Structure formats: C-alpha cells, structure tokens
Image: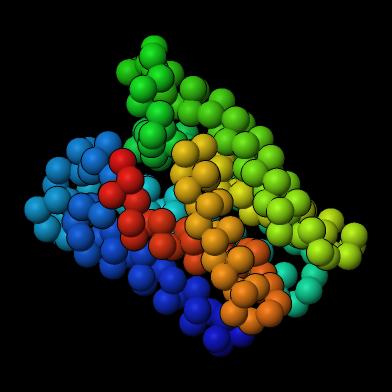
Length: 220
C-alpha cells in the first residue's frame, strides 16, 4: 500500500508541477487565456486553474484505480466507473473552466452559446457524446489488439478499454479522447512488442493521459 500511495502521489506531483509550476502556460491557448493571473507566476493560482487541476486529479485517480485492479487480473468494478461519471458531471457544473476544457478542438462548431449556464448545459450533452465515443473507441481498440487472444481475454479487454476511454471522454471531451486513445494504443502495442506480452490497457491509458497533459498545449 505504501508504494501504491507513493505512486499516486508522484503522479499528482508531476501533473501539479506541469500545470502550476508553469503558471498555467502548459494549458492549451483556449484555456490559458482565462488564467491571466496564473501566467505571470505560480502564485497566486487562478481559481480556474485549480478547478481544471481538480478535474485532472479525479480522472487520473480513476485510471490509477482501474490499472491497479487490472494488474491483479480482476474485472474493473462498475462502482468506480459510476463514481467517476458523477465526479465528471459535478466538476463540469462547478466551474465554467472545466466545461470549456470539454470543447478543445471543437471551437469550429457554430452556435456554441457564450452564456455560462448554457455552456454547462451543452457541455453536459457533450459528455454523453464523449462517453459514447469513448465506448466505441474502446471496443474498436479491443478488436484490433485482441485478435489473437482467447474469447474470454478478448471480452475482458473490450470491457476494460470501453470503461477506460469512456471515463477519459467524460472528463476531457471527444478530441482529447481520440488523442489519448491513439497514444494508449501505441503504448499498449509497444509493450506487446517489447515484453512479448501485453501490459494492462488501463496502465497504458494512464501513462498516455499523463503524457497528454504535458503536451496538449501543442495540439490546440
């Protein structure tokens, strides 16, 4: 348990250093614009940056829990997934900055409302779209990676990838889900080539999400 807690703490520290240590400059331009106070110095920290970081912490905690469960060769409990969905929606409605983070890569959509209440409403609908997209992407990923696996192992991989990418979609939106899914697929495939056996897809998605948070300002 010590190393489990240490690992999670190090993940939080890494993402915190990237987001707070950079004064918000690690965020994509669409989000960085609302953190003017945080751009000059790590302190004072803009409230919006704290809310976005809180959303990332919840997502990373969920993925970390998924990875630990799968490393013990157990099925991911649906209770963790439902708790993650509740947290995603709660954070979405708690602060408009979290809602705005759902729209990365989608600013071309015409008619997006500017009023905060409507933004949160449309973002809630976008969560559902992202959840469906994550589920479909997870299923396709399992079909691609599980071709040579026994039927039971293939079903477990399909369930795991669906839950993982569905969770990512609920927190980060559709475009971010595609990016994390593509990177997780690459990491998972690389582990298969290097180790002659696949690691946990949840672990690959966790690492992919951390890398994405470090690099996503270059994508938007």
